[in-house]
Length: 197
Image (cartoon, rainbow, N blue to C red; front, side, top):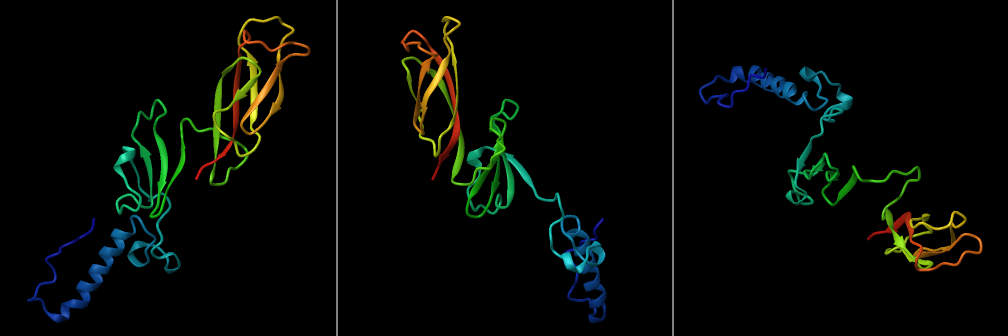
């Protein structure tokens, strides 16, 4: 327990008591700071790491996304979880800094073995189509990965075959020699990166 008394030192105290009072103050400060920081002396830390934060002492907080602003003294340098319905996946994790807030992840974020470097972001588009040509609704930075399947009941010899895949969409045929018509519904998904900024 830290002995902390802001009423000390008094004007009536003797000058000869000053060194003892100063040593006591330094000891109390070292004890208090050593809870979160590497601190030499009574704190138990070394001079080489003096003043560095101990691992695991950063503070994370939970609040509405609208409750913080970039550069706010109360949020800078912290991990932040939005307080939507975290159980259902609407909570998101951010790192807040003095100049920017970085989205680190959430329950609905895709993972990939390929790292994506800013300003790129992973985007997944999905839908249904009929007629042979599909637009993703977004333009990818490169050629996305596309998966397709037939959703309506058709002959077992008919399956979707991609004719061409571009950054903005794809075209398809229904199996060798099949004719694409508006009665066959195709389900599709595309995954790729998009430039934000």
